[in-house]
Length: 166
Image (cartoon, rainbow, N blue to C red):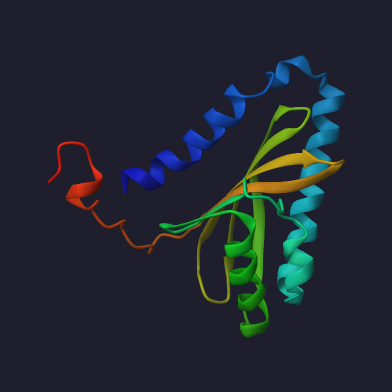
């Protein structure tokens, strides 16, 4: 449980620590970035509900730097995520999503954090955290975490993978 709770604040802290503070931006700049990022979220959910995998994937950073955490499954790099998402959407045409943006925080001119709550026809309550970066003039999701209340606990680390284990 502790690992899930720490993921969101840790991602936000890292993103904020690596970028200029949003206070360097004017109110108008923050409002513009917020509107742009929120529109990307709306477009993403339209693509998800249309089950258009290629269109869904356009919203994510196509890079080895991309990271996705679904429950406790961690995927780094574009290729593994693209294979998973590319197969999931066409295979699940009856699943639709609803969402509400709970919070958008502009961290810099090129980084924003979005927290969403929602549901699907398969899950009563879902939560997403997305770190977006402006890459080549387009907002892309560089890190996404998705979970829901019934998600499983992470297995305990193997003793050989922790200091003092063995």
